Amino acid sequence: MVEQQLRRRGIEDQRVLAAMATVPRERFVPEELRHRAYRDGALAIGAGQTISQPWIVAFMTAQLGLDGDERVLEVGTGSGYGAAVLSRCCREVVTIERHRSLAERARRVLAELGYDNVEVRHGDGALGAPDRAPFDGIAVTAAMSGAPPQALLDQLAPGGVLVGPVRHGEREVLARFHEDGRMEPLVPVRFVPLLRGEEE
Ligand code: SAH
Image (cartoon, rainbow, N blue to C red):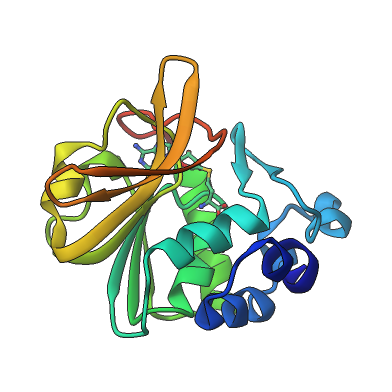
């Protein structure tokens, strides 16, 4: 996976490549799909949600430019895999998931793997985690409509960036956003939508 899906397709960040080589992706995938865990694509994880393609996780993490000492917020925990990869690249991770069942499963897997610098919260990630802000980086793993929620931009530390997909009508692009809302488009993508509120 690291050679063929990542390095060959331009992922160079050593910290990210090491994390992708270390984190056991099969632990974040439902039992019956384990044989497909390292495939070059997204997989269904329940509650109508998906674990992102390995390349997307690596690319988004690399875009945060982490050097090991940061505090990072992830919006959309899903399986917990992205949070696990982030946790190997920075000091601490707060990750928020609106589906309680997914948040609980991710929390359990992360604890079993001993990734104790990740806090999993159940709630509406669009509100961020003001009690833990500011964040040096924010990764949003569900498609935002038009622009990132202002609450998230407000929780960025000076010089911090938010990476995530934005949808404009039918078009969706992964982009980097700065504190002032300035956007740098990166690649076309397809994510599940960022929904407001939380689910049991
Ligand atoms: N990072 C995940 C990919 C998750 S897919 C992984 O590595 O597996 C996106 C997730 O975002 C879904 O689980 C979805 O339920 C969640 N989501 C959507 N809107 C949300 C919101 N407002 N707050 C928190 N989570 C949200």
